[in-house]
Amino acid sequence: MQVADPQFLPLPALRRIAALVTAQAAKLERAKKLAAAEDLEERKKNAAAGTGPAARKRRRMEAKGKAKAGPALTPTSSAAPAVDEDLSGDEVEEATGVKAVAVEARKAVKPRKRGTIPFAQGEHVLLVGEGNFSYAASLLLMSPPVLTPHLLTATSYDSAQAVHDKYPDAKLHLDALVAAGATVLFGVDATALAKTPQLKGREFDRVVFNFPHTGQGITDQARNVRANQTLLLLFFRSVTPLLRQGLPSAPEVAKSKKGKGKKRRVDSDDEDNVPVVEDEDEDGGVLGLAGVTPAPPKTAGTVLITLRTALPYSLWSVPQLGTKGPLLAPSILPRPLPRGQQPTFKIKRSFEFDLRDYEGYEHRRTVGYVAGVSSRANEDLTLTARERGLKRREEKEAKEREEKEERMGTAAKGAIRTTEFELVPEKDEDDAYDDDVIKGVGDQGMRKWGGK
Image: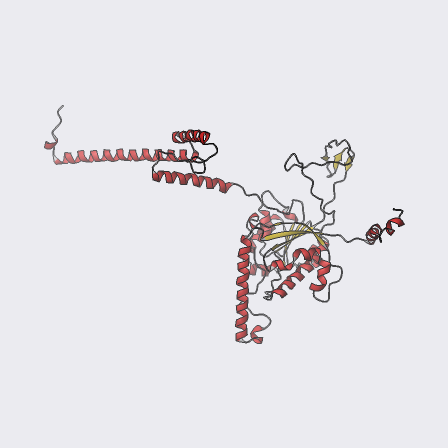
């Protein structure tokens, strides 16, 4: 078969042949690009996973280099991402970025160790001074659960209407609490808890007062400190009748030297140190060698106060207000002093309050007064325009200073701490008499009872 000379082909035929050749060339070019893209993707995967011929060759070279050079780092140290040598400059940069993103993703999904959460299931918990109730709602979101929802009571000093007016997001949190079975109370004064009808006769294992503040907007620092110290002293007095009666907290059990984190119990009455296998009976008692023993009594209830450690909050001296209350109350509380003795607490523990542990919690200020807009104590009538301007400027500067301290304090580690207090029971007259006899007046007390 003879092929016609292209010089003698008609023009339409030449055009059709040219179009076919162009289409075939374009198809071939697309196939080459697709193959190159697939090869690049495979190289990226190999570079990210550290596999492939080049990666294996590099690892062999690194092993030989380490064997010769000892502990010194080789040029292709493991600190740098593994990249295939056959890739171009742009491809190397892209592959390196892929591995860096993968490493960051693995770091991101690594679970963060949760801080101290001072609650346990089965405990009766009372929250005092809730603003928008976001803290109470955040406790319901924790996994694994940290408390029993129907044993949680969250209270607010404001009325229900005031809470909804001041905190538009409160409804969402309140609905979640009610749906979970928690108790929500409004109009509860932290300094008069025992007078609240819904709280009378109840006992709690944990009573929490987060970020207490009078919300009076006092700009004078000394007066502000005194007002908040008064709030806390009265709170300590008010919360005492609501704390569960029980044994003081037990000391920590000594850890075993051999096993890190493992605890062992040594029975001093068992001379042969024979291990005792214990099981619980249906009533919560313990089945041991001596038969059924009653379940241990509950420990005493505790009070938890969370506050920032920065100024001016550090001036409140919260630990001293709890542990040295009887000494400090007469000089701080207004006259006439309340009846009865100021209770004495001891510090059980203190730990960092990490905001990241409480998902959905958003702190809200107590004050409803807006500086520079509202007036108080008839200042519009009693102050001149110049005096009002100076006062507003002072309040603005104080607010800016407080916000700056808050930003700096929140960023610093340990800037927010929770202190847990345990009530020190008052000694009765017999205990006091026994102490006097033992301590005595020198050795006379011991000689009185036949001692040497």
